[in-house]
Image 1 (cartoon, rainbow, N blue to C red):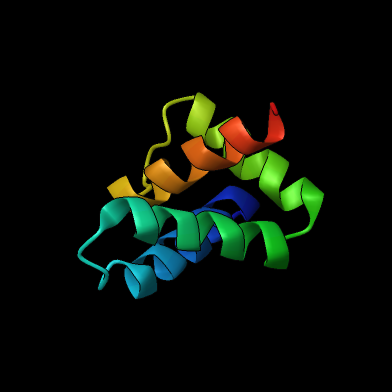
Image 2 (image 1 turned 90 degrees about the horizontal axis):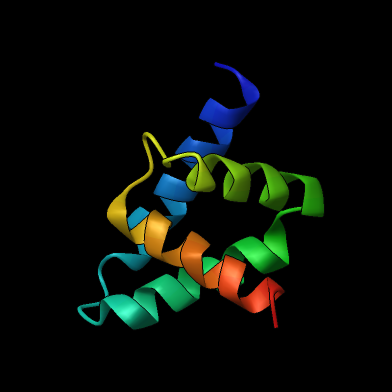
Length: 75
């Protein structure tokens, strides 16, 4: 498994945990906060870059969360 595949798996695993929340906006916020707190900047950069190139392999919730990360970093 290469580096981006590992990051995709990690993002999807985090998303699977938060996906139990029926409010998907809150779930995506939880995923985004978890990634901001737990991932080093290089990892966040790589997953954002992957998302911006189409996000192949990312769950819908992971994509929502990464979109929130992008919005937060542009503020």
